[in-house]
Amino acid sequence: MRKQQGVALITVLLVMAIVAVIATNLGTQLQRQVTRTASFEQSEQSYWMWLSGEAVLKEVLQQEIELSDGIVHANQNWAQRAGPFPVQGGQIAAQVNDLRSCFNLNSLAGTEQQGLSLEKRRQQFQQLLVSLEVDAFQAESLAGALIDWLDADSELTQSGAEDPDYEALPHPYQTANGLLFDVSELRMIKGFTAEIVQRIKPFVCVVPGNAELLINVNTLDEDSAVLLVAVTQGKLTLESAKQLIQARPENGYESRETLLQDSLLTGAQDGETGSLDELAVSSEYFLLQAYIQWGSLETTARSVLHVTPGQARVVYRAMGED
Image 1: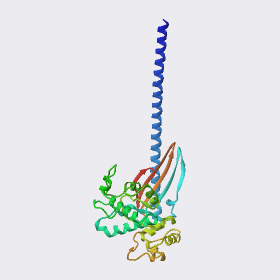
Image 2: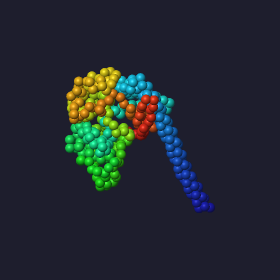
Image 3: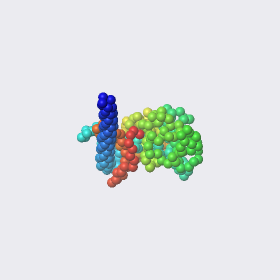
Image 4: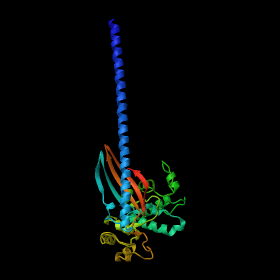
């Protein structure tokens, strides 16, 4: 009898242990499900806050550009960092940058028919790199590799890199043969190390679907004066470029003609650098960087907006830092 009671007790203990394990597993699964649900809700709320930020920015940009007759300058409301603003359950902050106050990497895309323009862009990009203390030989190689990444053919550009260079890597891939969408894509291109990308990142950008190079002098700060040195291929010194920005009218130059009349630019307009077609006083492309905190979730989101008279649309979206 005692032996049977002992067996029964062991059986009961085993059953209780099994039930405890099952209950623990069910509790863990339930907790995971609750966590997933909460994370989904937070992610969804962050997404809608992001879109709301886009909608507000569209209205602000359209109104301000219309009021200024198309002139875009750094004293307009859109250029002021906004927030953080508290909202129920979290907060949001935003920063907007003019994508014509940086060197558009897509401007190095070209064809044989655009050869002269492409060579000029190459020289301007190399000047930017050299001004940022990149070795001249390395600058030439970086420019060549970027051109080969962007162009549609498989012909090797001077000091460039085409498919065979990438196919020989431990994890092979091919050139994009098309425009960039994000600055982060530079890390795929030969020679663009993390250190190089970090160095040039404050001065370069990608305008999705656009290969123009325009520099809006009205939105440059003194730290970006190196861009003026680049587009003039060194004809304008860094000191003169900073002086030009310092002497800029409070609400920017009212026209391109007024800008080009500045005595500091006179010497930069010659047969070699051309008529400085790259200099502008307006812009159509803007980058929204939104910083969102909702519950325990923190999100960074980016949107590129294209603004024209009567219309503002988003041409690119991405989550996370660029």
